[in-house]
Length: 237
Image (cartoon, rainbow, N blue to C red; front, side, top):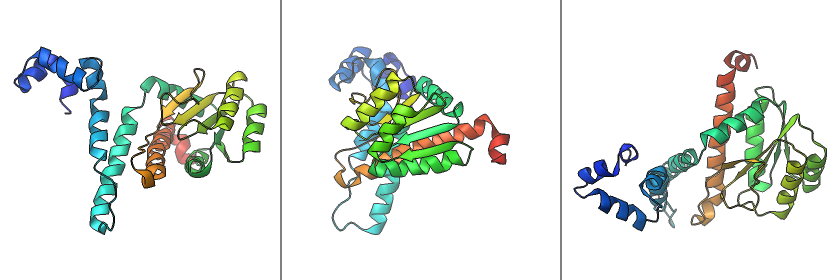
């Protein structure tokens, strides 16, 4: 599967003892627009297929759960990585590295990963505040200035209050990064940068954990890139 992304339809046909036309028909039956679309999404497609076998069973043994969670977390990171747009992430890094103040708007479990991100970024000299209370979130959206970058975290992007806060930030021209799980999320704004975390609704009891692992990878990536940008300053901090 790792080789396919570098193959033409003719090369894949030779490897599978078929022909290029059969390859194109096959990927269309899988639901992809064309062979190029298939190659782009192949890694994510296989990861999702693999993760479907990872649900926790009743009275499952310790060793089995240890192995499943290790495979599950690796799969989540792979999926998160596959959804990153290099161009978007470069812009995200510019918004974070160029601003002294980073504000994170999130609720419940998402606020916990916000606290984790705050710990990382504060260690590099950023002034990071996590806003969980709705009144404070609204106050921030109405009063922050362009010296702040605001990150809004929402699993599904359906929260009316968070949509209102995001609208205000966009209207006021405040740098805004949205992290959600769905590209069709009502929260996503054309004027905001959007990163996508992984969520699997089929894992009812593990949904929060899966999204947390995905977002932790994104924030770890931000942290590592900030260190790389100015290693000597990072060491001083």
